[in-house]
Image (tube, rainbow, N blue to C red; front, top):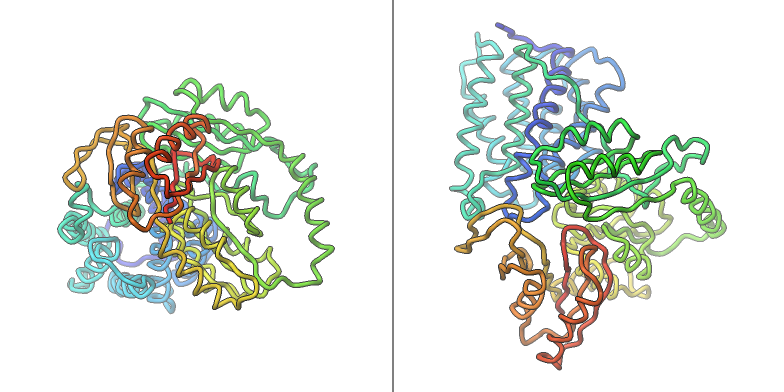
Length: 541
């Protein structure tokens, strides 16, 4: 097909096909996680970001390519999840800027848009790192602008730039040592190529069926708009995790999708995490049991929750006339962690974290609910910081993003908050506190791999200290004890252990008793976190 001009209709189709292509490859992309831990979510985050773009794009008909690109930019900006999603939204923002005066696109126009996309994405990242999606986009754009574009058809144009993108992706381990150690290519770059393949499919008329499950990261802790009880179509917020031997649980996803709405379905190797609003939680769980064993399950009656929310909001409105000096938003996953943050004065807790990163829009909605002079956002995850910064930049309120990279850092920062200080003084003090907090995470490996000269088998227990694997064990107990032993240094005075949903208080107490006997000068504290996927989160100060 010698298509040499793309109009609004075709560009719309290309973005839809790009999204479908990305959705098809997202589990492969998730599996390219540098660490073999159960939080590979680059593919999921990029897919959800693009789905948000398509949702915005579908709100109305578009007369020219400029408005198509602008809608994609707006939708992806608000729906951006994780660092990969934020960078992708900036790529689309740059592309829209590069073609803002166009009715239709020639290959030269598209190449120019790619160049602006790459430039914009680089500028959006504080410290751009080569060997990432940034490199893949930049080299693709450079190649596109070096071509003789006088009489080239789009299918030939895409054939060339996709080949260039693949070569750039193949080279990413040579530019980024952690990729080479893990034996993987960059996940974000792989996702970008999936989008380009979808674009090409749109040009060639090779259309995939539109069967993406539209999802929103909602939970019983977040109820935008608070519909009246009679307007709640599906009454029970149902969340569960199953362990399954099936590599592809797509059939389960499709079956559960028919039972309700607001569905989140994420598969990471042998774990499947499901969130759905339904009137038949039992049927959803029975369907899941055909695929594996339940790891955890939680069901909430949203109609009852709604009545409680209205009551709490009525109480809150009584004091709306008085504006708070400071407000706090924290991201956390787990009932115990939620309660801890609430007790520390956090106004709004967004349910999320590993594998479920909130979007820019989620963060902005939380900001709007707080009546305060200054609002602090604690992302508590390195993959949420960019979305938090994007929400800050889009909001008209005074927002400070504390770059908390873990739950322990977020908790310690809040403990150090002093209402008598100014916003900037508090920020400075809390940033100082973050430097003194070490975070140890105890989880498991989702694949066989070799990392930093360590042989790791699937289901091995990993101790990860601030991004470095410090122990590989066969048992969770050994992972906790040996991980803490390896993390302790001469400055360690307090160790707080937050145990997750898959371990008990009794077994945690027994393990900590051993450590207390050997380290009498250190104060040990145990708290229920209830977090999934990570058996233990440990703070060392």
